[in-house]
Amino acid sequence: TRLLKDWADEIHRESLLLMELSQSSGYSVQELAKTLPQALIVVPEADKESQVCRSEDLLTCFPQLHGFIAGTIAPYIESLLGEPYVLFKDKLNFKWPGGGGFPAHQDFPAFDFLGPRIHVTAMVAIDPATIENGCLQVADDWCSTFADDPAIDSELLAEGRAVLPYIIEGKNHGSIQPALSQKIKWTPLEALPGDVILISSFVPHYSEPNRSQLPRRAMLFTLNRFFEGDHRGAYYYVKRHDFDNPAFHFATPTHARSKD
Image (cartoon, rainbow, N blue to C red; front, side, top):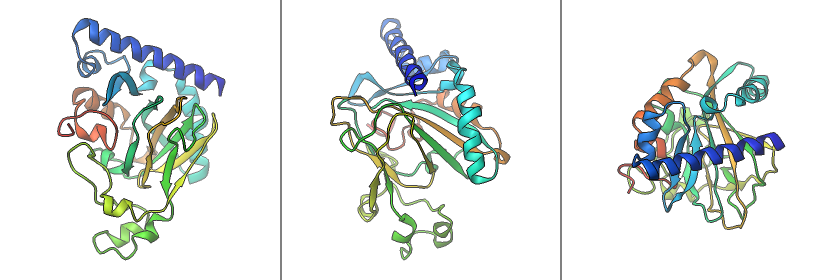
């Protein structure tokens, strides 16, 4: 747990250096992500651009994370699901005091442009996650909630793989349609540093803004089934070259084209 915190602190320092470089050089963080492929992808908070909302492509810049992912996270998921999984994306969400919330959404539509159909995300708490500081909240028995909705594919719903209708474009791009999210019973998942929460890319989830005076940082490692291929390189290549694509700012408190 102490090592994870040290990594998170170091990632934040590197992120701030990149933001300072952006200001001094005149290159935007979007341009830096494209021109410095070995550097972190840094995404500022929409309402406070001097504050880091998240940093991505951690493994490229911090190879010491490889042992933690390949030696701990991936084998644990394999032991639970009975088949190997490979890393798809990796990021650190910061959520500083006053940091924005993440509207109700599913992750899968943001990953749909690449091949894998099944993803599992391991959220590793760096700081205590509480209701006050905006812990993760997940949909409770969401498949039963929408079992009689004719607009949702019943076969996919029965498999837990249905995509709920969501908002396209605008500030809340990627958010589940409010009329649907209001029907969901939400369960807050408070966590202690070092706790791991696993969710599939189809589980609806959201988080409130951080209304406390303490950060709520979490590392998130998304993996896909091994037999569906290794897509991490392709994912980050596209992200670095199309930084403002709304697909990469799905239901997040960050800027993207067509979201502003």
